Length: 406
Image 1 (cartoon, rainbow, N blue to C red):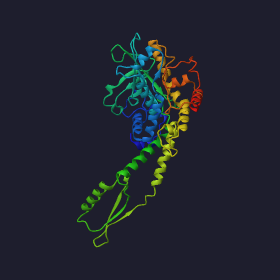
Image 2 (image 1 turned 180 degrees about the horizontal axis):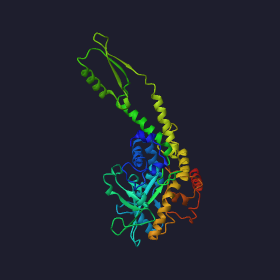
Image 3 (image 1 turned 90 degrees about the vertical axis):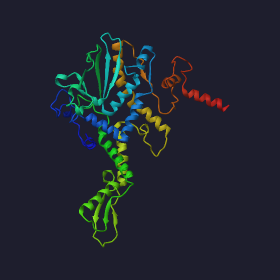
Image 4 (image 1 turned 120 degrees about the vertical axis):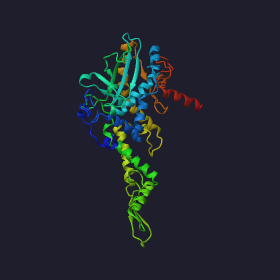
């Protein structure tokens, strides 16, 4: 599970059903070694551009909270599980997993009378779908790399809409599997940025190379001609090892080739290699950044990526408006639709008016927006029937200009 493998490995549908190396076939493996989710999690922590896009998309899709007029529903959302989490925190984790891996897992806990409802998020690296005799279940394990040593620690939770008392405490549990659609993949989803896996690895490696050069004081690689004779071969090797330890960076940056000259020769001389590839590395990093934004289906200004154009307010608002319609609202409904149905089914609480509060990164609002719409967008109380709130923002701005003009 190294980054080189991640950058080049082809994930095929057959990987989902390959019998794993330990001879255990109770679960559908994800990746050739069943550790593809772990490999993706590793990459998500190493590539700063990729991680920045994931963080920003999660932030915007999670929104600023939830709006509903139902007091009972408000109370539920403020405390949705025994760990004291509110619904926004669970919603944020689901969104992050969805953007990171294309799979998200939500555990639903209640009792036979539907007297309460708890919602728990589960880390996507801990979940696998059951196979054969475990079909219809989600299997949970804290470390799938070591599952062959601790198979008895696997927990089983039925897939929604089935419920079971899996803990023996009288409560019923079920697991909801959210997965992004990908042709040929039936069991697990794939992240939307899957085509950008290679460029994500490139962005990480170019950053790693630059850091290595910085740590190495940007020393050049080359040939060092050392004058004089060594008493023995070991003495020469010790000098070479000490020099390389102090001056050679990661990835062989600053790598020096030693050549010992005989006694009586000229002074010690260093011949550097040509470092003309610096611009190629910079261009490669810039290209991988652009490709990553494209693979994510996202926008540069909403990713925190600086451009030479500076802080363009209009561009930010325009890209947010497009992202809201094309990505944000779709992803919100993707999770909320199922969760609202579960809340109504178990507790009988109406959830029709439950919505995510979305706010643009800047406070500017279009002139064609009505006052009540602007207040709703800001999470404030609003009244669609109030004559004053039915006014367009453009009318208010015009009135202010008239007053100021007097």
